[in-house]
Image (cartoon, rainbow, N blue to C red; front, side):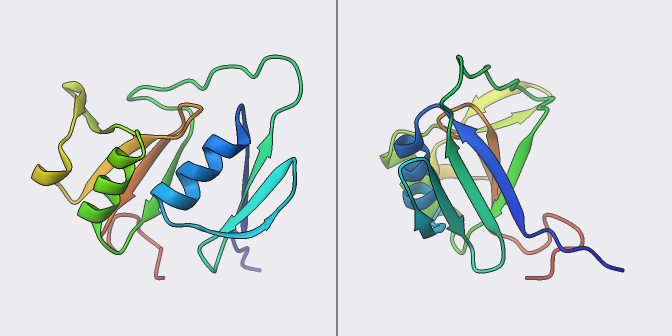
Length: 136
């Protein structure tokens, strides 16, 4: 038996800001939206963002040793970096020297990182070799 990863879900403190990030900055398509959640997709995976309606949403544990981070491949790394910056999302690298802000006009690497509105780190790459086992 071979399982297939088809769905990831996160709870957002502000659903609309999260939709702007995932749809407008990173280019995922909206497949369905209600007042309390939004289903986004790359055509292969469902990424559901829920509005958190409970008590205060705990802060995401961030930094170089993230509990959780998500990877997204984009067709053009520079364009994605510019779009993130235009929408107010800071792009960075977080190697052993700590978090370093990057300039979209001077990307030296094949990837960058950006945080969603709740602080979840998202690795952005333009290469097909960033994550082993991914063939799409």
